[in-house]
Amino acid sequence: VTVSSGNFAIKNVTNEATIIGKDTSGTFVGSFNEANNKNLVLEKCTAQGPVTGHEGSIGGMIGEVSSTFNSSITFKDIKLYGSVNGRGLNDHCHLGGFIGLITSNTGLSVIVDDTESNMSIQEASVNSFVGGVVGTIAKNDEMKVTVINSKIQNSLSVSAGLNTIGGFIGFVNENNNFTLHIENNTGGVSMIMDNTQGNGNAGGYVGLFSDNKGTVIAVNKNQQSVDLELS
Image (cartoon, rainbow, N blue to C red; front, top):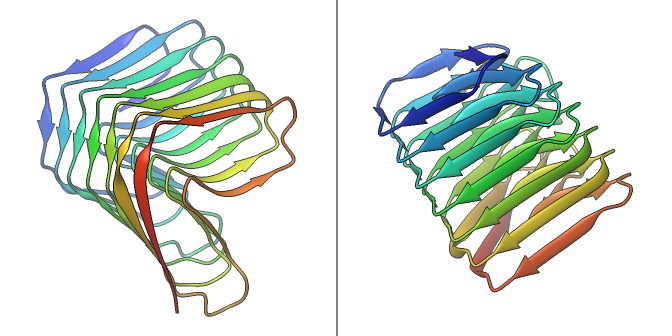
């Protein structure tokens, strides 16, 4: 599904399908792009099947969000039990439990509220970005991401080196006036980095944060455990 116009809601749906894609792959929505003043709501949905992408952006719910203006995405009462798998032939893949890649948006709001995520997220290509909620957030203006009241308990692994991995967000880069609000979440994240080709980046909340301007980060009242294994 590609969403580019009109308000769109997906409610009370369980998806057990096996998804295999290429450029943008998501269990519910492949891409949400070029939407102006629109709202996408996913509520009381469950994703149980695996989603696999061979390159590009891969998400447990949405593959990619790009080039939107004053729009919003809300995840409410979502349960994720499947897996997100990257098998990129090229580098720069983006994998996230909810969204693979968020880029080139203005005035976008993303809310993750009262959700439960217990997923396996695995990437096997070089120089890629993996996050328990979002893989990469890059080149956005006036954007806010809120993750609240949720249980995030994922297993993340990268195995080809030169990768970035984060318990919530993998890579945050070149955003202007970006706000990240993480509050009242529980769970635990297991991260494995098989860094065979050089240096990588890993963080319990964010893997790598660079070249952002006007940023506000609020992390409050979370009970998260992080287990990082380097091999």
